[in-house]
Length: 150
Image (cartoon, rainbow, N blue to C red; front, side, top):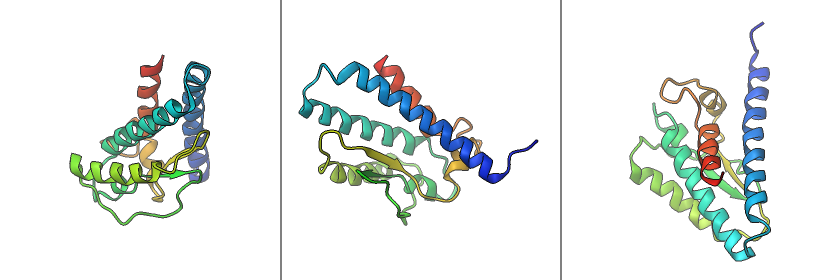
């Protein structure tokens, strides 16, 4: 039986959440007991920026809205939709990352940073809804970063 829209969204959310949990466990097990708090905050900032950069560059481009709507939230999930369009060059990705760096200045030890895209169709893109990113963006980027830390 084919999935309905709600079932598909629930499945995608579960897959991404699982990937995030695995990644967080790897980081926690490898670094929490060996690194000082300021170093952990610095590492977290670097990881967030690298994840954001990878996700942005993997996001399919048609109008550029999906790519331009990636954002971060420190301590809470961003709720807004950005009115940006990023057609794919490095400079536009750099602008999004620069905005994230400003938000990361407020990061304290133990705070959660959310990487988010609030467009209605982003989960369909994450589920391979575009031939430009048949494997998605966020799951693939998390797996790439996991490999670095194994």
